[in-house]
Image (cartoon, rainbow, N blue to C red; front, side, top):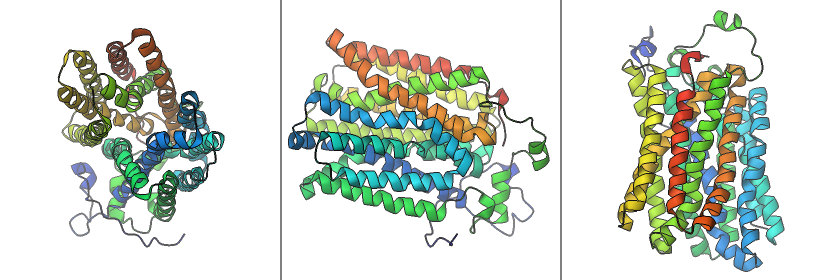
Length: 446
């Protein structure tokens, strides 16, 4: 493998004293390649969401050009999740089998290609096929990130790795609408906007291929001091060899149930805000299109900041001696309780700007749910981290598929958004209970 020509610089994160106490700590500073790795993963997740939301932004223009009916528009908009959800488990198996470096690089190259091909669509059917292919290509990204967390980060740093990866998601939503809308308006072409987005993705895929590695010890820029930090708290090779061979998914049924239900219920709230939030702002709060765009940007930027805050706060609590289970599950439960209270309070607010402020605060705490991406590395054996990440993300994707339909049914039956907000409060409560059901007493430090 050729040495990378790119040189990324990200500040070294704080590490526990035990991890920093190396024989050469006073003479040689540890390299920070692991944080550059996650800077690339962060960029990938951000571009992933920009490509994903591009169709939603362009749909009014595309629907007019192709004379698409509302039902066909809905079908095309939902088609991304069909293959995305179905391929989570096969994608997780591929990650464990071939490694996240190869899978991420090929996945990014393919989804960039399909984003470009969507620019050449001639009608609704060809656009639908392009979106299904895009969903299939994007499927392995987040489970690959979960695998990289287990390979590149010590247990004491994994919360930060999880949120660095997942915070790109709300930031991509916030920026994606502005960027794609600007490109369409400036170039007067949704096709050129899609093409530019696809080419940018291909460039990022090339960077991932050049810089990422599955084994930190093989990366030419990692020094011995950083390897000691990465391996701090892991099992020794002898202890690893003495483990009982992993059977099945290698995770207790109780924790697996909590993981799947918790992630699905969290996704119902997140994707509910993503898909129906603009309609709520327009119909219940009276915002025009510009106001909707500005409010959506504020809400999801707060979500990105909340994601980062949750991860750094969690690792900080652990460094101060708080047990990992108490720190992770406590922060997640608190975030769910805040969301529950906010959705119950929202119908009582009459000022639309106060409603946006409350939604922004809700997104800030809701995105502490990014900590869920630390669970595969904490709960699963090293040989099953990718698979568990895929199973977990499939549960979240299933929630993403279901919630637009369920909210539509509730709206049609109730004629207003108050019951929808009550439904989101219920999902928040289920998220809290399911998270508490996960047992971190079985944590594996592999």
